[in-house]
Length: 299
Image (cartoon, rainbow, N blue to C red):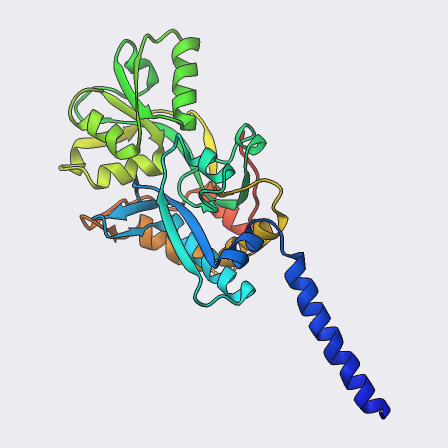
């Protein structure tokens, strides 16, 4: 055997060995996806405009579109063009448990990355930054938190807003009757029907619920923000390969400008189902995040 043939065989063997080794080195979620040919997304029913169901037919939204970019990157990296994508509806209350027990692999919705949750799950680079405020009827005479004393206030169970609202109620002795519902749609319904005078939630979500109201002009978002929070896609802890892939997709969207296009689509233009415009301009916090992508919690 001449030297050229030997060298060629050695190179071929090295490539095959390297390929096999790369496959063996897959860990965590990417290995699970490679082995099963399936990725399972946790999806929200009514987190407008982040991740919500459109007429029982399909999922749409700002965060959902980001999630699908991550799915495309997984297909490329794992060479799985026919990767099956499953979607399981989740709520604020069960999303962490379903991620931890392997029922879902990732959740890109409106989940706040905070230090308490980081003990249970991990987060990708942030995809959005919000403030927590209240939505009230335009003629209710409510301008800020002190005006809620002794009144019924609704929020969504299992959210950071619920925790903040209960703490404020105790600390400031406001005597509010706090109503918790299973999702944002039900919370707004509680407000719209008069069972509560205010709905506390992340400002972007409040604008989303307002956009699908029977008469959007009847409702306003008021109050000094009680917190600044960052949303990230939620993934399992100690899964560096999956986090790196997801972070790369998100930071890439911020660097190439596609995140701005996505933002305009969902926050500055008419959105389904009613074709109403949230008219929610890019904040200074969001501009700073796009300039310097990161996965920091803001509390």
